Structure formats: C-alpha cells, structure tokens
Image (cartoon, rainbow, N blue to C red):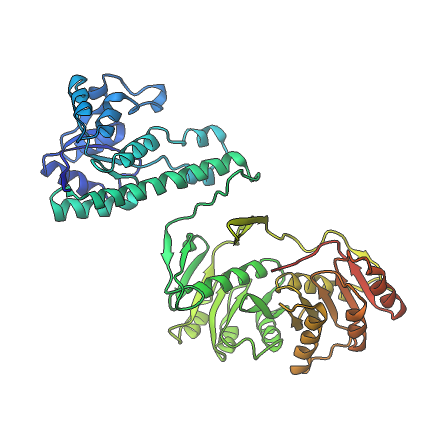
Length: 504
C-alpha cells in the first residue's frame, strides 16, 4: 500500500548529504519537526521547521540527554493508522502523525577509538536515537525509518522517483536496515563494557558486507564483512576474491611475527617459502628458493618497502597478490605492468584478538595464538648455539603458521622443507624431507620444529639420519623421555617450549 509522507522528524548527528532531502521535503509540503543543531541546519536552508520543544512543551534537559523521549513524539510514530482507537487518542492529546523519521546515532565506536576518557565515551551512548529507530521500525507499516547517513541516498531516490510516496515493501526494507544499525550499535557498547571478557552471547558485528564473486568455489555464495580500507591501500589489480582474503589474512598474520627483513610466500594459507636476510632482495631470493614450484600463483608478503631491484625479480614469476608496507615509485611501475596483479599496501597490523569457527549448531571462539613459546628448556645433549637458537625460534614461528600436523625444517633462517596437514606427524616429516631434497637443500645442521609433541622417538631418529642437529617441540607426551634420550645419546639439541601450536 502506497503512503504519502506528510510529516517528518529529523534529528541527526551527521548532516552530510542531507541538504537535498530537506529541500525536497520542503518542496513537497512536508511538515518537519527537529531538534538543536539539526533544526538550525534545516532553517539555514530556508526550509520551515517546527521545534520538538514546541510540540512537547518541554525543553531539552539534562545537558541534551533528554530531547525526544515524550509521548507526543513516540505517540505520533507508534500510532497504528488503521486502528480507530489509536487515531482517537492522537486527536485527544493533540499528537501529530509522524510518517518519516530520519535519525542517526551518536558515534560511539569512533569515540572509543579516539579516546580512553570513560565519561566522554559514556555520553556517546545514544538513548533517544535508538528509541526512535525501534519505534519507527516497529511501525514500518505506516512509518519510513532512515537510521544512518548511509541510507540518505535511498531516501532521496524515493522522494525523487515517487514524489514522497512509499510502498510497504520499501518501508519494511528501511526498517530491516534500521534494526541492523541498532544491533551493531548495541554489540559495540556491550563489547566496550565487557572489556574483552567472555560474553554470555556470541556477539560480533562488522561493517556492511561486500559481496564476493563467489565463495571458495563458483557454486558457493560469499560475502566479506569488514572494512579493508582500514588495513590496506589497494594500489593495483583486480577485485579480491573470497580465497584471496583467506590467504591475505594468513600472510599478514605470519609476517607480523618477524622484525628482521623477511619475505614469505603463502599458498592455500600455508607457508611455502620464508626467509629473513639483511636485504629485501636476498630475503626474496631465499624465500622463493624454498619451494619455487609452490610459489606459482601464491600470495607474497614482506615487512619492508619494496624496491625496484626486488620488484624486477618478483615480476619474473606469476603471483596473485603482493603485500608490503610500501612500494618505491619505480618498483610500483614495474609491478603494475601486469593488470591483474593485486598490490596491497598494508597500513597497520591485523588486530585479531579472537578466532571464530562455526561448528555444528553453534560457534567456537578462542583467543588468537599469540607468541612463540612460554619457556625455553634445553633438554637435549647440549645447549643450542646462538645460530641454532635463532633457527629454532624461526622454525617454531613458521611451524605455528602451518596446518597440523606440522613440521618445519629451517637453516640460516630459511624454510627449506615443510610438511603440513597430514594425519601423522611422521608423514609430515617425510614430506618436509622430500621437499628439501626436491630443491637440493642440505639438511646437515638444520633445525626442526614440530607444532605438537612427538609421541615416539621415530621423528627425531629420522631427523638425525638426515643430518638435522637441533629440534624444538612443546613436549607433553607420556613418552617425551624417549625423544629426549635419543637426542642426548646422539649429540642433538632438544628444546621443550611448553607451547603447542595446533592449527586446524
């Protein structure tokens, strides 16, 4: 059923892009009610406006905390136009019908980001705005609700195309968006008060979804909820896909573990090459050498600015995405030669305190896996040398970012073999050794990391046979001593960390 907008309540924080709407409402003879700064904005446009205080006979009180919370406002919004009793009461108490409500909410999330001053934050918890939104949304059969500046364009189109008349389907669509706004707002407030403590309800709210071309596969729909522009400046290339985003996340989570100049190659969320070196070009060369085959079509990431020499070398292979904190101008020219390459300038670290996974009829939530190890217990035949310790620490971090069961083989801060996603740890080790052999790496003096304990001494036996001299693992098996004793008897370093790094 088409309903004509004859009256409106406008009370907003953001006035950007509101000018055309106000003028159109004025041209269409709509009676406008407003408050404070919004009222002044409307009147400065030369459009007539009735102060809410004039309607309610109450001024704005308590420092602006109470302005619209009054029966003459909410009665006009909630009255059911098809209900004779409601209409009689409107007439009895001189309450005007309100057909349109334009309101947005105080910028609570922005305030939390900009200050730690609690009183300032508390004052940005909107009361009247949320109440107006809920009332108008509840009565969508009669009222249009516009709950944020993001909907101004939709309303302007309705006013322009339909002369201010709306269908019930349009009003319901506006209401749906309005309740989404309220839900997101309430989640943000609850999370502030929870202060990272576990919640009784699963509460996550992210910005407006970006529809992907498809999900993991073409027959699956996919949407990304979040604000990528906070983390990346996209400098070049095609649109990011669902799978791209999964790999980009894995790449960013990995690279922020390292402070030295480091380059890494990611494929299907697993590390297939990574190295730390004094120069970027040397780090790239060593990372690529770790597995040239898997690097094809991979996601590349580094923690330093890309220079022209490195860019020219990178351009010799096919890759999907390159992520870096910056690009020299001449390097960017080289890399932009292929139109589909995605180049991302990372503006800030990925801050992800929690990990979510939907399982069965619910959601699992856990803290992100932070850090490298809890303890450094030298349990083998001898203490690790400084070079061995550096490789063990490096290997343990790499292993943390491989799917379980995971084994990482490292030499001179270069990944030279890895096994991941296997159903047995010994299979992962065999895969790692085979990868090292495929690219002619010498395992003598290499370090081995395992994401979880060794249930038997078979892995350290095989490692010893290949020339690996140092091992790092969390420990925790009832048969830890078997592996420890083998290392002691064969001159191997064995470090126990007490920190398991399963990645399912």
